[in-house]
Length: 184
Image (cartoon, rainbow, N blue to C red; front, side):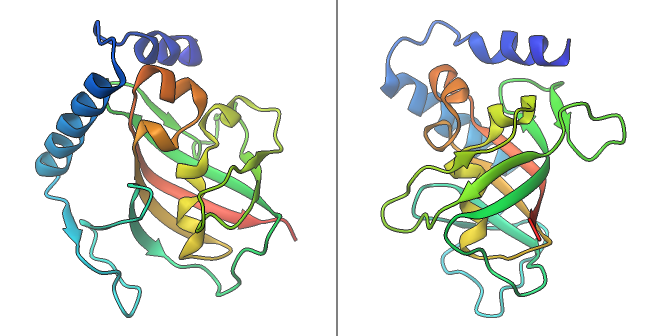
């Protein structure tokens, strides 16, 4: 039922027909969201890797990253199998939030293979058969360029870096909490 409601919201594109119009609407929504939450965009990635709660660094792929906990120091290798839990809010809805940390979460973790996303941004490979795979994307994996195993981050992901579902709807996503755990 939650998935159906989410698809209903993201499938409505408010009559926007062009990609340019979707980009403009996304930019406006992201700026408004960041202003309402007093988010600050840093010019440079912090040398010590420490972020204040409201600070974000804009990556080359236009994903905004805030590191909550950088993990245990073990960084992802090419092809690393990653289990990912997350809490995500849909920008176009004030009410839809998927909480992958709750005990009754029926999606299961998103499972994907990580590949170096620096040059050029390449695709992650989905491994799970759960509904969470709808959220697996380059945007979701982007934090792994800076953090390691058992890390927590926040992400603001533009639709162009999301899965096909969100690309077609023009829906940016705010991941208020993402946890990456490597397969041991």
